[in-house]
Length: 336
Image 1 (spheres, rainbow, N blue to C red):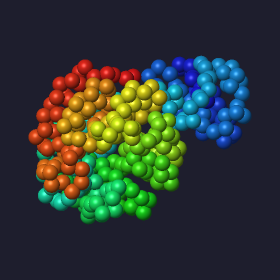
Image 2 (image 1 turned 90 degrees about the horizontal axis):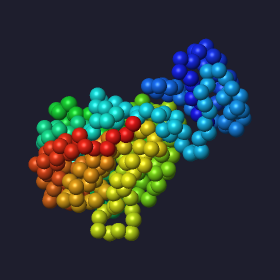
Image 3 (image 1 turned 45 degrees about the vertical axis):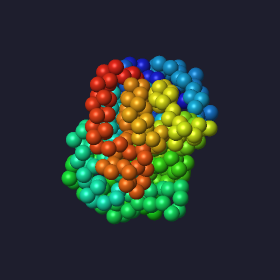
């Protein structure tokens, strides 16, 4: 249920309303918009008489919410959320570019790439320390040592860092990580999501391989329901019958999610296509469609990369791509 308050409403009456709702074990979520205040009621709202609330002098209207996700719902929070990642703002009309290697291989490799992508215009550095792989014989990442190298690259470049957590047992290693990524395979690891919801740290939530947009938003709701509302969504391709690409990039998710939620949405064209030559057109298309950010894999020697070299751009190609993206941003779709 959503309660829309009148402009310049009486503050004392509003406090009395909140106290009454909380006495019935209703969680009250207040969103201050530019023109109105929206109050989201979360809990068993069947016990509340909507007409009684609507009759209050401070209330403009009362609306029922049918969607199962509440805190992630744009109806509860009409204005776009802006998530601060180490001083970098994601959402609110600015396109941020996350770049770096799929997997951290060495200090020299990571630091070289970090300096290159920063010079080209990347604003956040990515790098995999813990790598979920389909084959148990594939490179699994440098793990804790990889996190140490990522922190060295952060110190060198000043870029905030994002990397993936795979298990609850690893969370104590992520204290200095600016942006914690939940991979597609963990999108419905609800115990992990709830624990991340108890942290005061931005979370990058990737869409599962076969998940609907509502399932993605429900996973975001798991994090937000525990108190952490610093969630950024990521479309990274879904599994379809098509085999020409690694996955099928769902760019329609951008305008659809912008209608459904206030959370920022970024696009990962590298994992979506799995083919380096397709990353450029898909990244440009995502920027034109109004994405809040891009996540692009960059490697200084893709043919010899230990992980996903076939989808990685060289630093030179990445720099050209950033210039092309910047040139089309004035014409990109905008969402209120």
